[in-house]
Length: 215
Image (tube, rainbow, N blue to C red; front, top):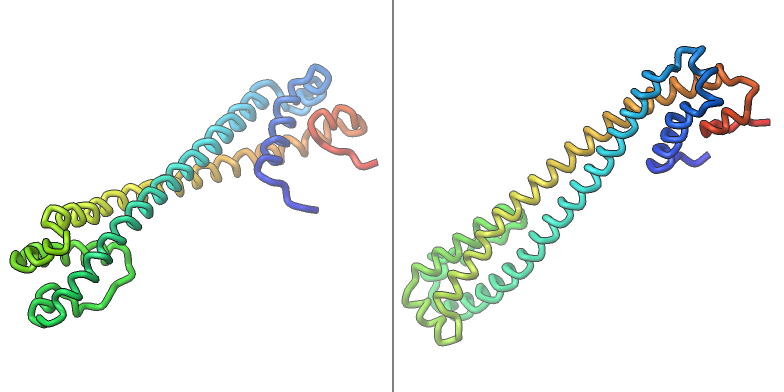
């Protein structure tokens, strides 16, 4: 038998708990100690679980949006950076000292945080080379443009921090949701077992609670 989806589990819990107050079902359950306060506790558990399920979905949507924004901005900033870097390498090809000052001999890093730091460092070094920046101006790359490209990369730090924070919030929302779902599952397991005893031989009443009786 296929495992129930979360939606199916929650619907089964809703049917079991809320229909336990049915006028025909409640009296025999009450005899077994499944009274109004007991069912009220189940309703509260169910409602809390539903709220946490919604919260978890919302947090993961916010995480997805934050990462989408980060990677979109990163793609644009990286494209500008790569174009500038290629031009700088071409125009500095005969000046090894300049290339060393610009750190052009350094290997490329893949870790995002390190890439951001290295890219910002590249722009800082480049902007200190006033004569070379003036040379770049001949090819329509201005100091203002270089500063804008640098700021765009610096801004990635905050966007990445925001995305990381959203990820943490989504993970915490999942933990809280799962804790509540476990609590709800424990409650419904007990309620179902007692209902099967209290309503033994009364298949129609059991089916009201979503409990299928095999013939």
